[in-house]
Image 1 (cartoon, rainbow, N blue to C red):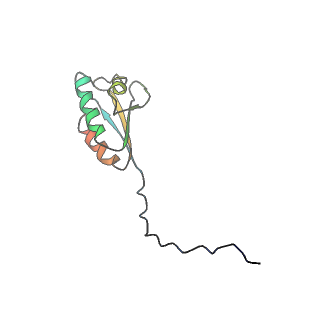
Image 2 (cartoon, rainbow, N blue to C red):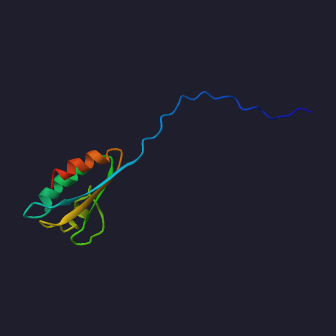
Length: 107
C-alpha cells in the first residue's frame, strides 16, 4: 500500500520587508484668519490635505464638533470655524507627520 502524502517542498521566498508602522499625529491649531475658515482658505486646506496618503481629520474644539474629513470641502465647512477657534488636526498613515506639518502652516 502506498501513501499519497507528499512532503512539503521548501519554498525560497525573498525576505519580505516589514510593513512600516502606521504613523499617527495630532495637534491643536488656532484659526488666525479674521474671516475664520471660509471657502477660499478652506480650499487651500483641502488641496494640501489631498496631497497626502494619510487619513486627515479635524474637529472644532471650540464648538465640540465631530471630526470631519479634511479632504472634503463640504465636511470642512461643517466645522464653522471662526477666528480664535481651536481645531484639533489628526492624521494617520505613512506621511502623517508631513501632512500635519504642511497643514499647520496654513493656520
